[in-house]
Image (cartoon, rainbow, N blue to C red):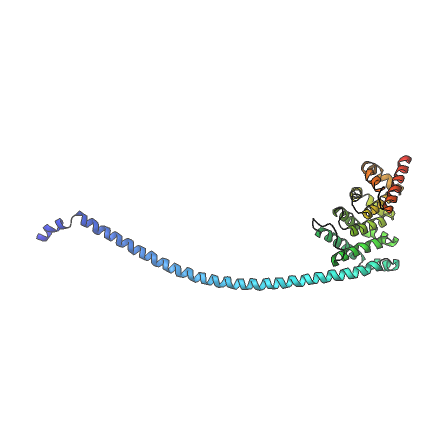
Length: 301
């Protein structure tokens, strides 16, 4: 009973509150310990997953390295094959270029079932070559296998077009090739790939000997703008063949009649006059003849 009476004096409000706070703190500590244990378990779990991921990553790296090595080997093989094909193509087409100067050989070539395919591939190859030229290209490396390949293809087309049977074949069956040649002549910058330009202009001139061929190329909307563009080329041989092609148009009455108005409106007369004073004798004479022909035609009209 004495304890009962004294206890309230000993256990005042502060002590009771402290005991309650202690209980609360112990509960929080227990909770934190449980959370910490859970974090330890999670850490072990993530460590295990990390080890698995690192092992998978190392495996993938090794696989990628193997694939990259295989890819590099494949690229090297492809490059070697491309170089071989280009070298072989240059050799074969150069030989064919020489052979195509023989009419009997050309007739045999055109009689082959692969003739259409060959000229289609020739056009695509020349187009691919021109597309691959950089913006700063000024001169064509004629000694490279690639250049020899393309020049030989253009030479074959020129030789085939030089023969009556070849002109008929190209005009009737390969007009896409003629369109490609005109397109590529317009894509090549002045002073660039002169030898290729000359061969393509020669092939168009040979085509112009055929009346159907002349009508076809002269009726193309890009034809006369192309000639005026090429007349500004710094190479005299390019200008010479442009004037030859223009003369073919002027000397064919039916074609000239249809083109007369366009020629009068767009003809770069001052440029032709300038070429008639060129130091290149052939170019000078052709330009003078062309001016005389234009005067006669203008007088007659």
